[in-house]
Length: 590
Image (cartoon, rainbow, N blue to C red):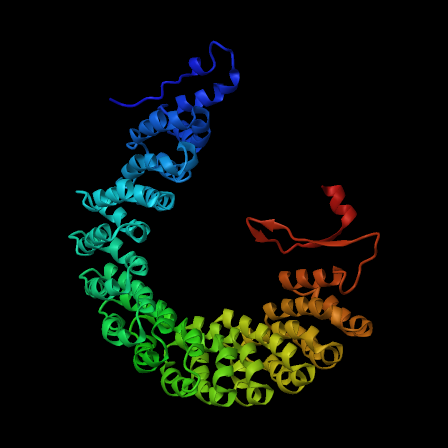
């Protein structure tokens, strides 16, 4: 028969007329309501109900009733599993905490993973509140029942509970727990072996060293050779914990053979896990094994056939190099690591951490080893790779210095300005601005500006437009003198360009660089050109020229009247008859 809470709304707010308990009675009724949302709301306020009932009635009525509701909706069960983890004081304190085990045990066997995980989390939490006696009498039998359950769901949940009860039970019970864990590590169901593998390192940490060597190592070896790659990759994660527990002299024989095997696993996901955990493995095994075993393994991961593995290894280059033994660090990097930088993601990662690598091996050797890689990346067929290397150019400039940059990399930066991909040309323009900010206006005047202005005569109109974009970006950094004397004449000359797109970008550029120019240049040189463009045959040229003329940054219009450029459209296309209307005319039309 189902348990029920005998208090009802009428009893709680009845004879004595005490209406203060009425909301509690409503919550109790909602626990049995057919509406899922109402049940969920009541479960989330379970602690309020328990406080109203008192510890004894919570133990004898509420918990049995909740145990019977385990066949509810998943979201209700999830909320219940979370609430029960905080119920110790509501059932009478640690002395009665075992009363919470039955509903949590049921929740730990349900099909929905998130509910089971939350139930295990709550069981782990309340296990710490059991006395050693209660742990053996109540909690450890629960773990055994779960570990021996017919359904894989209960056996997966058991894997997360061994480590929390093992340290505080007797040696006899410890032996039983180790046996149960061994059984689960060889379970017929992959999901159970996966759960056991995920908790292997955690369980190893609470075991005595002798049992780590005799039990855990054999389990680790077996799981690392499992037929399922999802199990093998979790064994790699456990390897870090196991390696930190063993004496240095045991690592080579007990751990390294399995780790070498994982680094060359046929599944890329396992190799990815090795790469992802490489820095932690390096710290766990120590410098000697790193030199002899991990360096070759790291080389292979950097050259792996799968891009995901190479990327994971590339992300560990900085940490790996920093953690190498000082006496052999430079030699290992120069001889073993840098020659591996053939894949874009590896080289880009090294370049992104250039300041750190520079501290280790020095800029001269770095530049000699890295320059070919930089040049190759700059000309890579994939435009996203070229884009990535552009973003690192200011960093390279800061590390390599102006002389080396001018000699080796300046040509690359200019070549990007005429790339066939717009995103590259745009990034290259921003790059020039950052370089000028780093090296100064004088460097720009001698090195960059002449080359940029030379592109104004390029037969490709896209390259001529890039000249304008560069001037827009560089004018402020270069200052008034360079902008007025060198850049402005080129912009004004380009106002006669045959391509309308170039002409309207001239208007936009004049508006952009206007704040940098002196007032004489604005009045005598810029204004006449803009007025000429405002009468251009092309609609867009006229529009942007008039916008520049009207803009406050160039020529403030009379305060009383502002001219507005009004474009009329017919059938979705601009009409040839466009006019300038005063603001007052527009208002009267409106």
